[in-house]
Length: 174
Image (cartoon, rainbow, N blue to C red; front, top):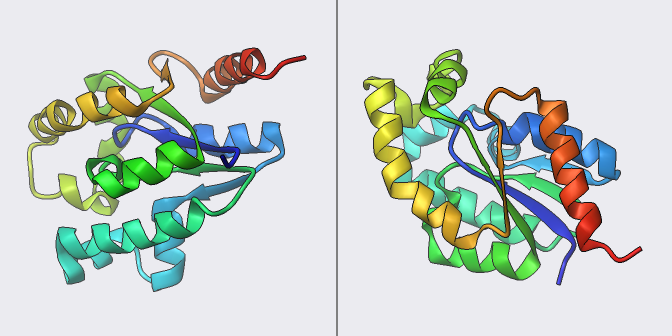
């Protein structure tokens, strides 16, 4: 088993921000799947989504996940829909610890509304209705595979990182 930490959850839950800080604290590498896809393609996620559609985007994401799960000592922030695919869930479960970060709807709306353009699944739609729809579809999957859950509501990222570090310290024998 690899010693990776995977952060899953809805967009706007804080996966990227918390993941970056957590990796720094643990002296681990950090990867944000959306950012890696953008770096490799030379365009943002919205362009990939627009040109290749949702299916093409998720195929790229799955290929990247196969590569990243082969690494060790990494914190990896996944896209919100990554866990919807059985093969992706198997990869995550077999190569590390899965942490589910969640935020209430009002916080998600606040966070995702700032860069709606970079979130193609929210473009040209009622953000609140779409987030509720995504939550109904995805939350049960997040719950089913996560080994730990942390709320990011009313907390600065540093506080969530401290909670995760405390949890991790209980997993490691002294």
